[in-house]
Structure formats: C-alpha cells, structure tokens
Image 1: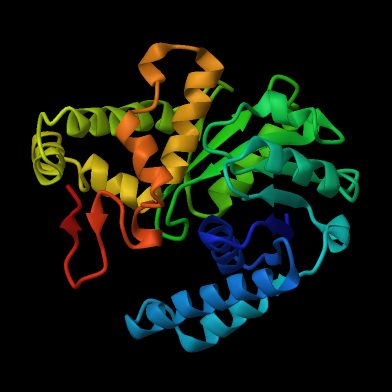
Image 2: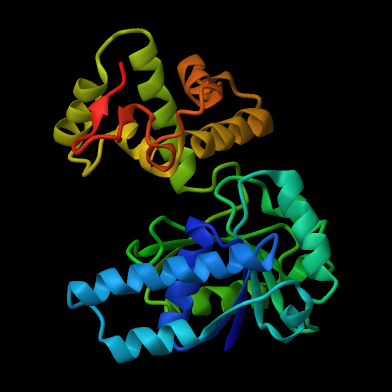
Length: 289
C-alpha cells in the first residue's frame, strides 16, 4: 500500500495521516470541505514543530513527511488510493453516508476501513460497494504515540483483506489485536464500562473525582484515572460508545450513567471544550464537582 486516503481531519484523522506519512506513504486527507482538510494538515505541522523542538525529528524529515499529506476537496482522487480509512465522528449515519460516497470511487482492489471504536463492522459493510473489502481498523489516540491497532473483520470480510490490513498496521510499527465483530471489540468493551461505572460512583457520591482517579491510578496501577481519561477521550465520544454497547446488546450493565449524559448536555466534553470532570481553563486542572 503506497497511497492512503483518510476521511476526517480531526484529532484521529490527522493522527492517522501523520503516522502513515511518517512511514513514507502518500496520504490524501479529506473532510467536509477543503478548508477543514487544510486545517488538519496545519495541525500536523504544529505537532511536527513540537517534535522538532524536543529533538524527536529532524527538520528535513518533518518537511518531507508534511509534503506527503495532500488535503483534497472531494473524494474523486480516492480512486487512486490503495486503502480508504474513515475517521469521522462516532455516529453511524454519518459514517454510512461516507462509505456510500467514497464507495463510488473505490478502486477494484482497494480496501475500505472504518476507524470506529464500537459500531458493528458487518452492519456498516452493507453501505460499502464490496463487504469482502471492508474492515474495521481501530487506531488509538494519540495515534502517533499509541502502539496498538485493533483489526476487526466483519462477517463478509475476505481473509485477504484481513491479511493486507494487518500487514499495513504492522508496517506502521504498531502491535495488532485481532478482534471478532462484537460490540466494542476488545479494548472499549472493557474500558467504557469501567469509565461509565466510575461516573456512576461519582454520581452516587461514593467518592470525589480526585479520589476515584487516585484509587485507579494507585490501586490498579493505571497511568491515568478513568475520569481523567474520559476527559481526554471526550465525554461525548464516551457517551456515544456506551450507547452503542447498550443499544446493540440491550444489556442493562451498559446503560449510560445519568451524570455522563448531564455533562454532555451541558457541553462539558473534557479537554477539547475546556471543561469536563476537570476544569482546564487554569494552569492546573481542578475537579468540577
């Protein structure tokens, strides 16, 4: 695979683009319009400037990496892509519309992948032109730093597709976890119920935000507490995923914590909005409850 298309120029999409371009592949980056795709590339440039400042990358290498990322205005150039990766928001209707539009230009041997963190692959594959060449490819945030990718074949995914995508993921220097197409796959099936339960514990006043996070950092040897991690992921994203688990399984253990719903309704989405379970407007994050 030499040419990769990435749909979605947000945090995940730009992280994927940077990671792929770092391995010498050409990347076409798209969003709802050209200006957003160009803004995504600008964010990659900012990340590379920080890496140069820390001596993690040479200026010439950063310049070459950036040159391999091309913002595009529409999906027509994707006809030349070996792999199209959808990295849009975790809303199934939005993703399905993307698959249908991008599928119209998908090459005869090209693969379409979704970076979904929870939505069933088999179901979304029905919106692609060839379910045998459709697969889940779940990156973790921040993509350039995290060493894991989940590969999730759907019921109709061909073994050749799984093999090619696994080789691609390993070629990025990542470890691969192969998951069956079950709700939440492996990591989020375990992680999101833990985050959701931490919010239940907070909402029931069993403990405060700092004590919940401290308990998990020190008692479970986690590098980050669940509420701090939720803020990093985005509370809206956490809610979307837990809703998918609940809707797909109808198991009451996945019902969203009311306080999580309330925070999202308030627009307190975590780091990206400046406030979630912690307030990030000052020099040091402080609990909001």
